Image (cartoon, rainbow, N blue to C red; front, side):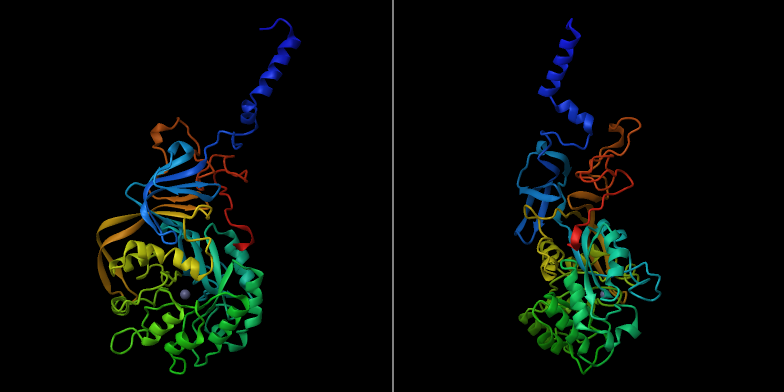
Length: 466
Ligand SMILES: [Zn+2]
């Protein structure tokens, strides 16, 4: 101890100026020291399936700042704040379900702009889905209500097809009203929210006219986005072959392709030649399983004919969620059961749908891409898969979601593979995750850009509706 108190004070000040690290600790645990690990999260040893980058191999995936930082055969766990062992599991881009119904909460009965829709967060992360596209629940008149009510408040990334009907899917009297199908205001609303409104939907029309399809295509052309068609009632005046060979543009999407409700198979039991011609023109074919749009007796012969879907989607809503359609992984299981490879099924649930809706920043694990990652287990056993009429196909495998990462943070972890065993923790432990990788239980003050800790999950949504 120096004898002179002033000299002692000077020494203390000198020590702090030379070693500022203790001061940064005083300022708060969230502050990163210069020695902070290179990666926030490292998923090690899993079999990566990334269709865009043509990877199907064991890889380590590193994430930093919500983006993919590296995908390599071996990365150093010492470089990561958090490491998860994915040995024996499959690591894919976050799944993208482009046919869901999410405009709930208005209180309207019997309406997809109301009670028929579901809030997505209860159905998505637990099956590896990080992005959904709402398939036309709202039109230009109520889109902004949908946005403020559901889209802006959900953790799932919700994109939307805007309905060509101004009132959206409020029921038959609205959805058959040709006077409320206007291309210009529909396109204007889409152009107001680029990257959020990613397509135009026409659906459920029961009349003989082509007008709903024509106006949807007109709106899609004005806004430079694709059209998705649920072709409604089967009418001889507007056959499906003419729809996909003449009315739709390349890149437009025909959903419910294995419903069999509109002549998808011809009377000989083979795929309608019109659909094959439509595919050659560049029309896209989507599953849209739903409560009433998937039959084994249609899908199996179509797949045998080589007519595979471009994208796999659920058509999730209250009328499908507990029927033959269970969830996204269940629909993927059906295509595995029909003989498609896991690589192919994953491509049709990630990179293909991302491209269809022109969101090529999603659906892959390129360095710099948004870090949405899904870790699944292929479970072996005896399983059954049912179609819309309750017919079963047996299967020996199914996909289970182990871990879901959205924007670089873990938002679902079925078996706690990212978590420490509780007895290894101090007595009286609190929330222990770090907000740089943990979207579930981050310790207070560890999430960058937010002061919220447990119970106040940070808003991970992108601004501007991207
Ligand atoms: Zn639908």
